[in-house]
Image (cartoon, one colour):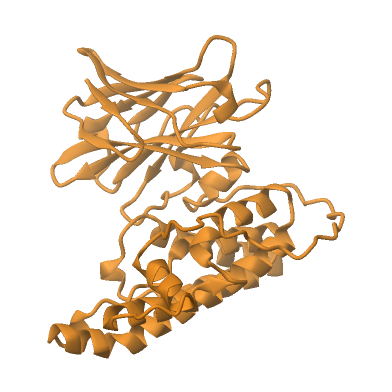
Length: 351
């Protein structure tokens, strides 16, 4: 039996498995659901969502046995399905969050016994969470523990897989005046990487070697209101959670500006690095702008009803995303699927 920590994976030799979730008695009632994804990280249609109103996938591969158990038959998975997402949401009778409901335990079983377990970890205010992913790797199936939470529930989660969700018209928001937002430098004297370390040396007017000069310049370009954009995650999440969407969008746009400045600085530094390593310029890596910030901004724009802005912000990211054959992770596919859906919704609005 494999005990999977968050992010860990293991091979799945069994072909008929069940996935269940349990909490300490009386602490939480959950609804499991599943999404079948293609290689680009998006669902083929809304029929690829398995939940209480649609308890089986069209191919019969995934079946909701009850609210807390999903059955998966891997031998019958269609070739175009690359990943099966297993997720859960707290039902309306449960107050609080996954974190406050106690240590939830996910168990993968077959006829031979327990194959793997995973204790849900690393959550805060979420009421919806991706528990596991069952995915193809070469000629075999593997299972990965995810524990990725979603504060705003099922709709936001499945929208990221390209499934259109009919939402009620939002009520007009009551404007709330905010003070100027400043993210504190909570890391003190503990640098989060070579860039911050070099930048702190520069501020202290300490001598820098050639590489430190490059790192400091790149780190400096990533500052947003005096703090590096990598440290803004909690503040952006708070603004979204408390409904300050316009303020969240303002911060996110400043962050996107910063990521593009960093990329431009890396590009400017590339010939120096190439010379140092005695390599050609194309062998020096210039990183893409991180897709996660664009995904955050796109979600906020959708909530604000600005479909044109959502499409434009994703197109802006594509201009800085580099060669698609070098993309790693599911965020890229989700952004492309989100843009396609926004176009469909915009066309419907214009009719």
